[in-house]
Amino acid sequence: MNALRPLLAVAVIFGAIFVGIRHGEHHTGKNAFETLYMHLMPGKLLTSDEALARHEAHEEHAGAEENAEHRNGAIAAQHATHGEASHDEHASDAHHATASELTDHPYLLAITLPGFPAVFDMHGAQEGTQLVATNLQLFQVAAVLLIFILFSGVPSYVRSGNGDWLTRRLTGFAMYIRDEMVEPAMGEADGRKFLPFFLCVFFFILFMNLMGLVPGSATATANIFVTGALALITLCSMVFCGMYAQGPLAFWKNLVPHVPLALWPLMFIVELLGLFVKPFALMIRLFANMTGGHLVVLSFMGLIFFFAGSMGSGAGYGVSPVAVGFAVFIMIIEVFVAMLQAYIFTQLSILFVGASVHPEH
Image (tube, rainbow, N blue to C red):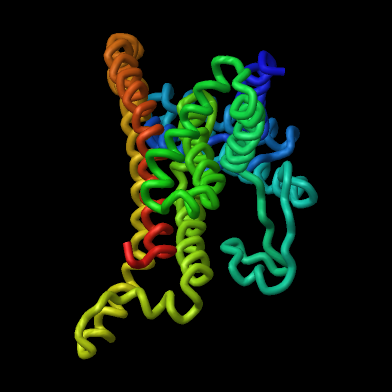
């Protein structure tokens, strides 16, 4: 079983990539840079027929535009204009046809929520809003599966001392988080209680960050809704664990340190705002760092298409070694950033929750 764990982990990662490529939406933009940047956006998972139909429609539209660009002269321009208009009508008809065909089951996985949640549907659904699975959910589920697969041998290794090289290293990571992060901030007793939670937070973020560096994957932590959900979990842990440890009223009372009574209302407002600012900072920091690195890599890759489109294919081939070299260099840095951001998010969450449980600290 020890030898199978790495193979199962690789199968989970590449299985998520395969499903994302096969069923994901095709990203298109006005230029090469916009098309590349759109890969940071979540793509809805479509059925196989729908994904194929949209891909073929995109290829047809791109081919028509490429043919139109090679036409010159006044008469050719008129024909090009007519051809483009006809193609736009055809593409529109194809789109409407596709939409009409896909209203039944256009998505690979969708859950309809009738009633009040439909008010929040941006598309104006009348009968209910749909929660549609995207490629980001694929890699979130994959991160959870990796935790179960890779750490399945850690408990037995801790008890017996028998384990492979991967189990020993993962155990070392877990013990570092326990001995150097959780217990120094929360104490041994409370640290043992919260250790499973913070281990899950750290490795969940770490695996999502690292999987986002694999070609063809998607970085869930480069989406502000994902980082916002993680920050919301930290906020709820701060509030509810603090109220449980101190008492419902004592928690809110202890938000304010010992100050003169006249300053207490003002300080309460400041501390209350600080309670929400802390997880908000966690959300923005993780989102910005993971998005920024990917934008730099995609910008370097976009230079190849930019030079090829503006100066010819020779210029594109000429600039590609430099662009790819810089992109690889940034990717190496991103491996470090992926681990660092998982550490920072977890360490700050430990400090914030620890301060709520132990206000005297």
